[in-house]
Amino acid sequence: MLQILGKTSSINVRKVLWTCAELGLSFEQEDWGAGFRATDVAEFRALNPNAMVPVIRDGDFVLWESNSIIRYLAGRYHGEAIYPGDPCERARCDQWIDWQASELNRSWSYAFLALVRHSPAHQDQQQIALSCANWTKHMAIIEGQLERTGAFIAGQTFSLADIPIALSVNRWLDTPLQHEDFPAVSAYMARLTGREGYRDYCRNGTP
Image 1 (cartoon, rainbow, N blue to C red):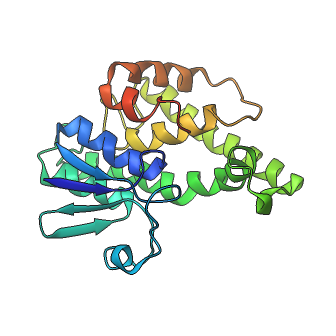
Image 2: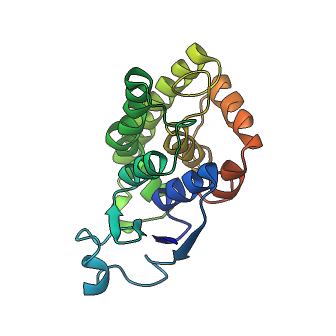
């Protein structure tokens, strides 16, 4: 049985849970992270030296880093429908997964910690405004891509890339800041409502 270590409120854990839903995978989940079992202990660090969730155990195989995990699961469990085998199509999917981690996440980090988590260390108003503006700039990139495809982030069909992107869009929608009117983004999120994984792990009241 696949084991997922991490609390459901974590955006990165929800990437893994949603991927499992898309692949029809059964799993056991253990709640680790703030408010649950502490990750900064020898037992957990033996699995992930970064002491961060998620971590999976798949038999004897242990893996951390959410985007690596979802790629592994799609590759291991016949997820060609959402993670294509064609090198060009897969690369297009991968570029959005990587962009979410390297660019989009960095844009919203300060604003999210300030406005949602109310972190005392993230209350510089100039930094909040800069992060909000940068976040909006990256959301405009998503809007432009969705205008071009008219459907999903990497093309005409749902793919693995939509999981991290939609979770980040959800975080933007649920953060109390001024939201630009992005009709293609709104249509995209409405389009995803037919997917059980989206309903359970994205638009589930958790930013």
